[in-house]
Length: 186
Image 1: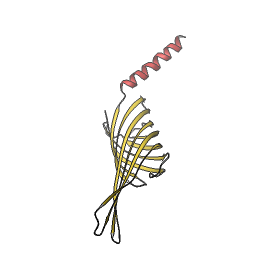
Image 2: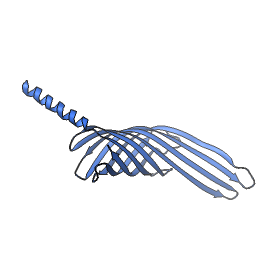
Image 3: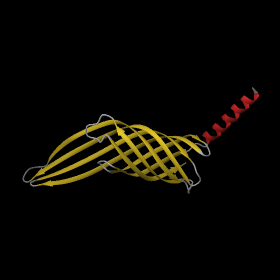
């Protein structure tokens, strides 16, 4: 019984000490995805839940914004298309800290809001604005990434997220996103 209590106390002490060193990370990224709109930026806040010396479990709240304007011309008609996409999500992440690099993988869920506005201009006619559609949907995704930890506070990273969106009219049902950015750990 004494061995069990000692093991329990030792485990509790390790977890308590590790939680006192738990870090919060704020990150920003340039993001490229395979569907329109294709470029945007992302922000996230990440919190370590189980920061062990080699392994880590964390949670992330992220926000991404994509916007793209396209112009097409037909004889006597100019078409302007403005696509905007906003997504917010929660992610559970497992990481391995290997000296200078820290590979990680995670799964998450979130919500995406998509808007497409059309504007038509014809020769001799006033501009007509048409809202082609608003759409939103729940999404699920998996991600893999790699952080470089050569500098203790600043960590450059690259990650890939592959996701699927449920019940969509205007948004693509599946696509991938590359994110390149910096994390500040404190």
